[in-house]
Image 1 (cartoon, rainbow, N blue to C red):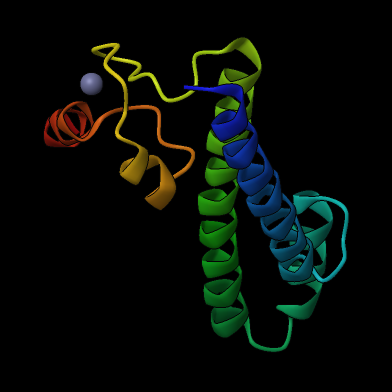
Image 2 (image 1 turned 30 degrees about the vertical axis):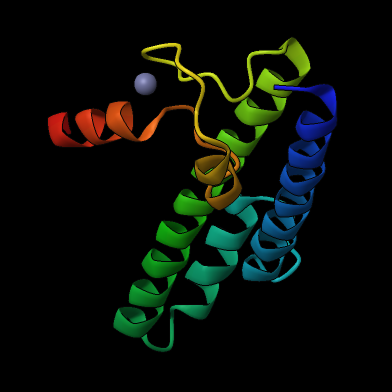
Length: 120
Ligand SMILES: [Zn+2]
């Protein structure tokens, strides 16, 4: 992978990263940490426990998903920095550019990813 192309993906990943962090911040109502969000969710929950709990659980599930995505993006940026970006983690083949465009933080080729998902 040439530096030019890596830089394009790096810019895209940084963009995605910023949007994710914005989204996480919005979900937490501007609160800095999940702990603060949980505390305020508990405070609000006194009126209607069941509804508030369900909403909070959903928020946390979304956040877990987005936190995971953030980790994947950071890992991809680290691979760009150390020059291993675009190489499959499992079989060391070059991940096709089309796949990277569709999913810039993927660490595996389609074959290895589907094997991994079949195991899970
Ligand atoms: Zn592979």
